[in-house]
Figure 1 (cartoon, rainbow, N blue to C red):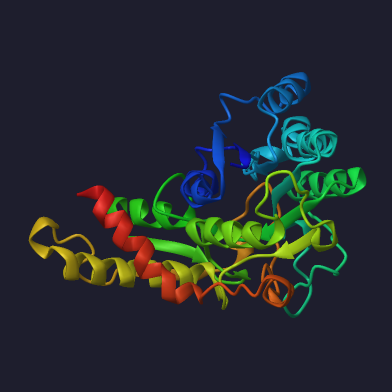
Figure 2 (figure 1 turned 90 degrees about the horizontal axis):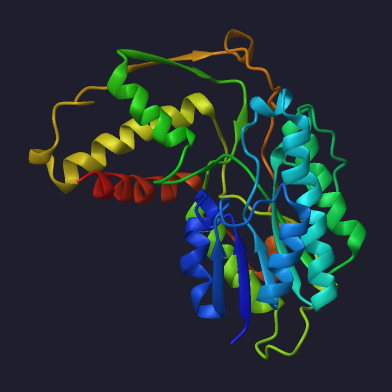
Length: 312
């Protein structure tokens, strides 16, 4: 079987990848504690010891605001380590999958961003992720870089779980309404990745990935909304899921809609500047791999069903 090295295996996307990659080969899943991406020598040693045919790098420094004061740390994990993984992949004749972000753009474009649009990050986090993309491309190994946005799921730290927590703690919420994007379920990213790999890598383990398909692809759920609209949808669908599944087990929490006030970015200042427009155009992914993720509204109830199930 093909041997697949998965980094960041306990993160939002990594957790899902451990399951979706299993039918494609023998998955060696390493958490950030098991493989320290700050240690270049450890990265090289680990990859050479495992000798995978495919590396899937789901590890990243994701503390967007802390990156403003921890640029060296963010740049090492997000910018330097992917290049080292690319060098080791090339040495082994292996393919590399890597994940990037909408934060490589400044958010000033009036419509959805294409892969060919010029990046212009406005935050340290965005700059570090762009550096990772460029490091992989400079090596020239066979690679797929998936840019995604507004990632959330039933586990980890994300906007959906934060909104549900705050709804229990507060009587009202204030949420930014002038930033738009496509909320993207971590499981959809993992499933699309597995489907793309099945097309990109030949079945026989001795064959190399299809180099001509290498490049950057945008990968998000369809549609768009703003953070305020996303928060309202989360609370509305959460009430519906709780009521439908087992209403007798749930307290009157969120029995009536709570007030969610729409505010501007200026009213909620943060250290790192966010793109006003994070919408990514997925037409290249659809054209090359015939993959199209469903609209974000369609999958939100599925995520919340899992949230409720985990809470029981």
